[in-house]
Image (tube, rainbow, N blue to C red; front, side, top):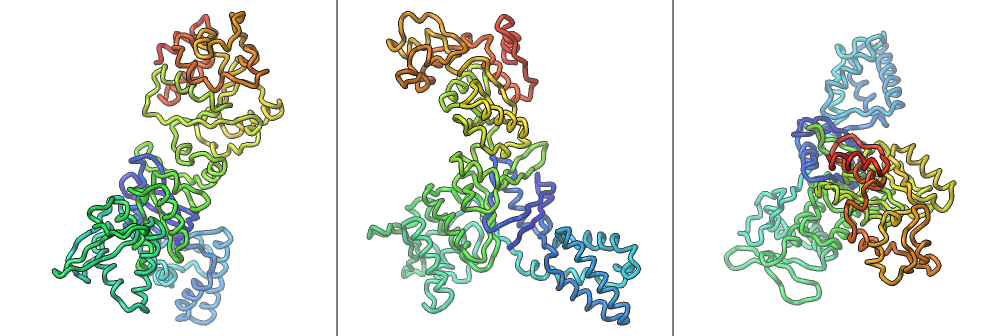
Length: 528
């Protein structure tokens, strides 16, 4: 397994490190963020370097000792012992050397040892390139990645040609499977065919067959496990063909590292889940997957999750494995939250339609992806907010003291620690920003006729007598806000909050709250 990779100089990828790779590693991000550029770089020899730790220095010492053996015993022994101690020091520092960067390694070693009387002649007396080549031989022999592109095409009818070359998009696979199928039942080839067949049927509840005709043409056909009728692959959806391509390459022994783009294409979510479980159970295989599917961001199934972004004309990579695990365990959509343009922490789910409507009123571009994170009660005091550390697009909107003052204080300190902007509204709740006439239109006879105004510092439910009935207007927040318009929010700090969300996404200065008689700087200069 390859735990460390460097990729560089491919399109928008200047220099990136993928460290601590595991069995299944996922790249996710928006379209044109650079996922394909990273995967392509891994498959271009000049653009990738494979890292190897110095955990076991004995092979290196052995290769060095072989080089040193041509000199006098005293020189050889002293040089080897010095080199061993040097490597032990690098090991303690958790140094990683990369195949493909031999010149860089030799230069660093020479500089480190130039003051040592036993090895100041390192690069002159020893063939370090040969030493490193021997040490990296296992990497050179085994690092043969395979890129499976997102546009895959399986031949459904083809002439028999058992020498046809297999292409990474799926060409030649039908002939290859036909060859495997017709081998001795005790052979490794037939066993491989059986594995492919079994995996296919378990993932999609279909089976496949490859049938020859009298014209030496073979046909790929599919059939539901519960039915009798076979259907030509040309008359079936693309999902089954895509799945067969991916399974075949996943089980084939020629490549230990599979770079798979968009495995979710044409696959039902349940098939995506089964496919992920399938590749997790394959021995001696490693996968790097680019995806837009939240199913492949399951932190219980994958080992590493990277968020890919394109900014300042360069591809950037961030390790979101821990954050994805937190979100997944909380039941939130991992991809939606980690690639959002803005994340708004709110106290109740019923706040969301209100804020969304106001954002629409102030003209927020619909292309922005805004996600909400409801934090009910004291849970907000104990939530691990470190997932948002160093993100400048997270905003918290609060209005009550919470269940306990201690919990509220802890939440505010947690936000401050993780750089989250907190806006505490002046009114008791979101519902206190509704006007009474709009509430009456929706609630109707449920409001006592003698109520003519609403207080800002007492919950609306309490003022309307709904709390005693264990009822709330919150469940109808979406209807109530739709009875209002932007002018009803003029001069409120809730409008200021929404204008500041818009300003942040438009990369413009935020505004301070101004009392109502100043009209919030003329509605933030008419939404800038």
